[in-house]
Image (cartoon, rainbow, N blue to C red; front, top):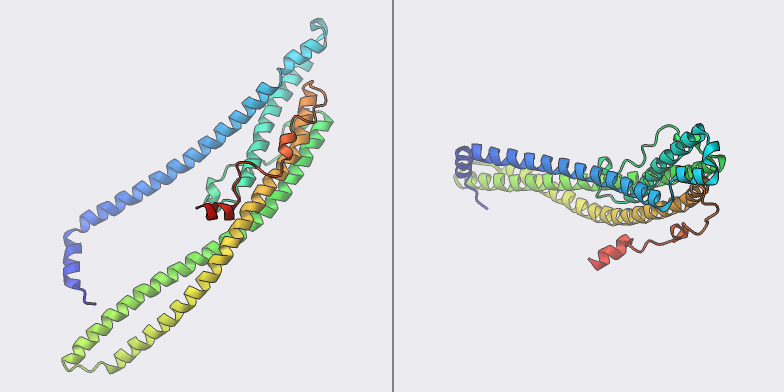
Length: 299
């Protein structure tokens, strides 16, 4: 393989500004696309939270109307009305927050989503204001669901970190393989140059032997990388499938743990006992969920 390095160098020097301009433009387009993707993810998370809160609010009557209908208007206390309104607002905010956490648990299983692109479901620092104004049964139901969330999140995050470490190891092997390929190509060019000099009477035996030894060493390492990459790829697929399934199961368990909280909120808003309203949350499978291995087979 003979390459005219002078011609390549002349081409690069003649078009250096054009090449640099296109490279800079491509980098700017990639940065802009990444920014737009993050902004779209944030907008979708906010829209989902608002949609969930609006849906729950539409399912129950206004708390002020319930308070007014259960007691004469003349005897209603302004403080009680303010407390009921505060409970209603905080409860709707809490519903949006816990639903976002459930979605965040599910998205933890998607390794194609970067950590900074995940929904902000884990960011629940400090006590929820609902714990201050809600009745004791609501508080107990909330704390029970929160304990389930923390346990599930810790397990799924540990699995995600293990899967990410495998991906990083694969990326390191790919980078090493690319480096070996470049080094091998360089050795071939230098060997051809030495052969050309040898044809002109220049002795390059030691240098030729050095190049051959280095070429063989790189070839052996390339075989080892190929074997190790195959093993890591199989393990990474297995870990990714396990992570996705575990994250989905954790999200389902957390949603089932939220059902008592929702029932207590409805009871606090004057609906009484309604244990069957959230029975659909107890489903063990999601009709829209496709296991990772089934998705790959379908593809």
